[in-house]
Image (cartoon, rainbow, N blue to C red):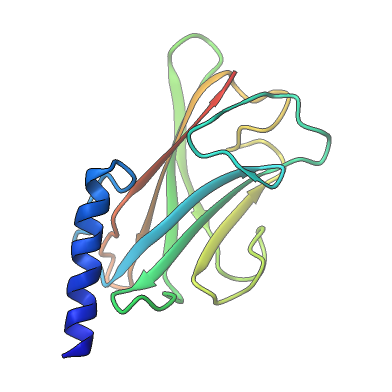
Amino acid sequence: MHTRLLTLSLVVGLAVSACDGSTPTQPTSSSIVLQKATVSVAGTVVNGTTVSRDHETGASTRFEAHLVDLAGRPALGHTARIDYMRPNGHGSMMNGGRMTLYDDGTHGDRMANDGIYCFEDFGGEYGCHGANAPMGRHDYDFFGMDHSNGETNHMLVTVTVG
């Protein structure tokens, strides 16, 4: 009974938070939930902000997703991904792709198996921190996948390089 009440509370909480724009979609058939999504540049969270390209040498963009199960516990052994779109530097056309986040203690992940999935981009392939980062809007659509390929809710994080 307590588990059902907790699950119902979590689903209602997702529906309420979807109204404020922070969680634009609901889970499809997933047994896990994307609880939080952040983009950090040089250690500072930059969700929804405008950043410059003049970060110091060694700076990086860090992507982080928190996945939890329906009881609110860290979701271990699943998959977290980001579909991204970046300006191509030639006007308004965009280029993009998909990247994987890791919960394995590598790739910028600070602790393995804690339900926090990360990727740290030092080279500027996906991020918005480098001197060559394309100017304009960078969209990062975070989501998770459970073991049966059910998708979690999505969270869109936008950062503008200007």
